[in-house]
Image 1 (cartoon, one colour):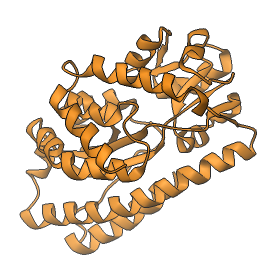
Image 2: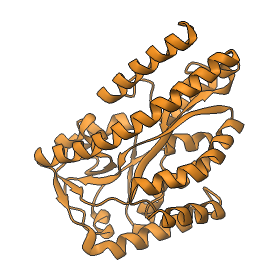
Image 3: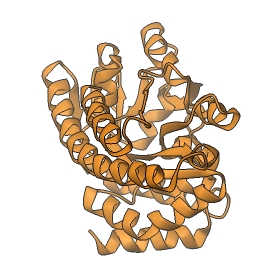
Image 4: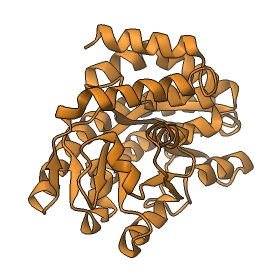
Length: 294
């Protein structure tokens, strides 16, 4: 995205000054390094040093990170921030234990259901062919609760899948749907959202071990400062993107009259994942923190 490219240019300028040109970040945009599972595999073999991943991608490294992506907990960014402040450090330590340093947390907008027919209640998904990201255990479980069947595809296959009719609905943020041009094959989007696309940037510990203490400190300090700036810009951009999509013909669908049904599906989804994908106690803590921040 334009925000991302500007942010990386600023990041590189600061890195060059602090490390006298020893450290620079080269980004590969637009999914050119493959899907998230492929990016993690590339890091493991050393052909990539770092990657910006959603919770789904981070879960390939440490599965319990998916607790940040479950439905029905987050209705505001304040709740996301509160949970990350309390739970984030221990998730970062767990990722470190798997061989990856966390350069910063991020999010990329509100997750909505975009579709070719209106989705008002969960059971509407039963007559549709929604896209399921290949590594996304959460949405797959949600569809199972509803009794719907999803179509697993890589992100790069979604555009073609929508065009050919292989899929007719997709979860996503307004930023992603606009940036990846999916909106050209979609007509509707849920007006409300009870989840956010949460993630973070990780870097191979084996790469960090090659750096001097001063360069490593510079990398983490500059990354932290830029991630916070990028976070705020992205949140605003996602809101603008949704407004722009509605002007380009995407019709918002009010799901509030069926709120109880959506909440029931979300609750069942979380309970099915608890104890299997993430510890039940971790889920309880996340729910309690989010409730306090409501």
